[in-house]
Structures are given as structure tokens and as C-alpha cells.
Image (cartoon, rainbow, N blue to C red; front, side, top):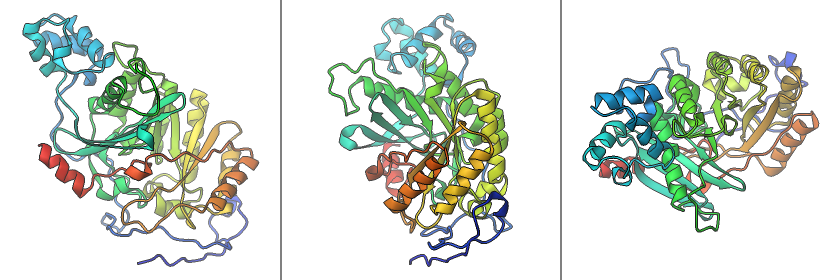
Length: 426
């Protein structure tokens, strides 16, 4: 089955004329699903899941607790409080939960202390590599059988980990594989953090390709992007608790720079405003994908709650509060949102709010199973980028990594094959 393009005449690309119909020489393909049925609410609108379904909670882990709470938990286990810092040093500095490696702990208490404070959270189901081994996708099984993925990528001068914040996603965007199955549950703070610790351990052991060196012990993840499974701001408290652990000095946390952490959202405006008040200078990314409500209502269902201008106002407010330049993420989809007039409209809307506050990251759409949608042609991509740059909006076509292993943006999803592999480990 193929999509039949429908052409809409357009008018000049002024923001005040958005409600009208435009003339265009290129087709206008409408968003629709293929190979799966989009969940709808009682009124026939795409279903949005903001609340996490009720499921058994994962065991409490060191990374779920504040430093003071860690001390109290250790004391509850009948041990002196200073053991908490020793455990934190092993976990956040040496990236291990292996009791056998914690030789500074008395042998008689070691196993029980680790079992009580560092219970296993992520079981590795599968690991796929591409790009000469410098891109690795992990499939993890959580304690209740839920599956999540994270992607580790080496770039010149940095190592980036794309982390998941939810098992599945409740935002129901039709072009994203993760959202097709809906939301399974929120991830805990420690489950989010453990993705980084496990990646750091692999790096230290020389498991990430792309660099010829005998000693990788000083290497670690330098950049985090919350662009894996889930809508980060729908799991706000746990995500922010995880961020606080990431930026806390070792051994209380991972000692990372907040400027190397990117928190993304499809546009949960109240949560964006809350993020601006956190006083943690993370990079904020708004996944916009369309500058006009007419298309974005269909492409990003949460736009039915908070419109394009509301999301952009909240993004600009983040810049004003923090001084941190905002990123606009824009998946370029052939004949759907890649029209030249949409580039002009996007530039106009961004410039209306000021100069120097934003950077646009267009990215060619990554293919997903059963989808009839595809990425824009190269000349169309180039024209889209050129128009934004010419309008004074810094714009960079994003590198897309991991497509061969379904590890690129929008491709992370647990398949039937993944579920079978996970079941074999249970």
C-alpha cells in the first residue's frame, strides 16, 4: 500500500496567515500510520499517556538515594555510615557493582552490602555494533521484563550516550517506532543512571571502537542525550534526579558537566517552564518537526494540548532564564514537512523571538519498520538548511548514526525478536 500525495495550494509564508491554505509545487503528504493502529481516545484523537501505568517498582538502589539517604540505608543494614561513600566510590568512579572487586570492604559483609545497596537493574539482552565498533546499541531487560535501549557513540573529542527515560512512550507520534507500542512504564532514577555506569564500564574495558589505545581507563561518557525511549519530561522527577546525580561531584555522582547533558521534549510546556527554574544549565532541545499547527497537530499529538507558539515561547523562556542556547530538532520527512516555505516560516517564528537564542538541527528521517515515510531528498534538505542559515538561524544538518542497527533517532523499539531473546534470559 502506498501513500497518495495530496496537494494543497498555499499562501505566502507569514505567521499571521497560518490558518489559510497555501499553494505549493511539491506534494503535501499527510501523516498517517502504516502497519500498526494508532491508539485513540474516546473522542477519536491520538491517545496521550502522561501517567505511568501501575507496575511493580524496581528495587531501591544507591542511585535512587541522596548521599544522606545512602548513609541511613547502610545504617539500616547494621553497618557504619561511611560504607555508603565506599560503595558510591566503586559505583560512580570505578563503574562496578561487582562485590569481588570491592576489596576495601570486609569480606564478611561485602556480598550482603552490595546486594542491599546495588541490586541488579539492567540485564543485557543484546548488543549490536556498527560504524567500525564506535556505535553500540544495547538492549536491556528491566526487573519486570520491560525492555529499553540505549546507544553509545564515539565522536572526535567526545563520547555520547543516548539514554532512555521510559519503557515505551506515551506521546504516540506516528513517525516514531518507540511510540507505536505505547507507554509501558517510567524508568527509575537508578535505571536511567545505570545505563551510563554500564557504558562507562564498557569504555574503560576497551569495548568501544574508534580509538587506537591500550589504556581506556580514563575515558568515559562525556555527553548525554535524553533522546532514547520515552518522553523525558513526562518522567520529570526521576529524570531530574538522574541529572543531579550525573552532575554531582564524584564519588557522590558521576562528575559530569551539565552543559554536556541534553534534555529533549516534544513540547510539554508546563514541564519546560519548570526545567527553566531548576538552575542546572543543561542543554534544552525541543523536538518541533513542523512550524505550523495544521501539520504539527497530526505529526506530534501533544500539539493538541500546547501549540507551536506556546512551545516556542517556553523554549525562549528557557534561554532567557538560563542563558543557554536552545536546540530545535526537526526530522525532515519527504513531502511532509520539508517544504521551503516551512523553513521560511520556522525562521520567521524563531526570529520573532530574538536573535542568537536558538540553533536548528534538521535530521533526515530514519526508517522504521512498516513505515511508508522516508527522508527528504538531499537537494531538499540542503535548501531547507540554506534558507534557515540565510535568515540568520544557525542550522546544522545532524549526523545520523546507527541506522544499520536500528539505533538512530526514532528507531528505538522492542521487537518481538527482542522480547523472545529477553524471555530466554528470565
